[in-house]
Length: 79
Image (tube, rainbow, N blue to C red; front, top):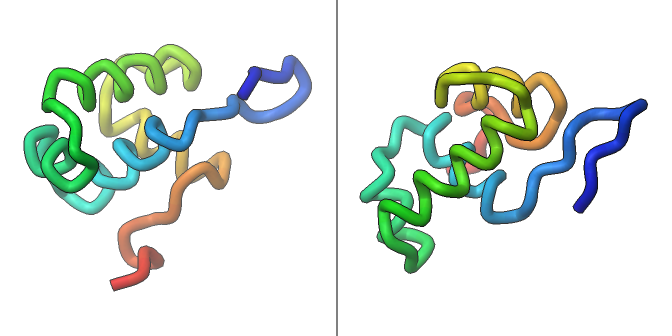
C-alpha cells in the first residue's frame, strides 16, 4: 500500500496486526507467537509503522492508527 499526500497513511496488514496487538496489551513476543513471526520481525513492522505514521513511540503509533481507522481501540476489538 502506498501513502497518499492527501489521505491517511496506509499500513500493511502485518503492521496493522502488530499495532492491534500492542493496543491489546501484548508484548512483541506474544504478538510474534500469535502471528508465527519472531519478536524482532514484529519490532521491525512496528518501526516501519511508526515511520509511516510519523511518530516516535509505540503508544503514539497505536493512538494514530486508531485515529486513522487502521486498527480498532481495545474496547472495540472483538473478543
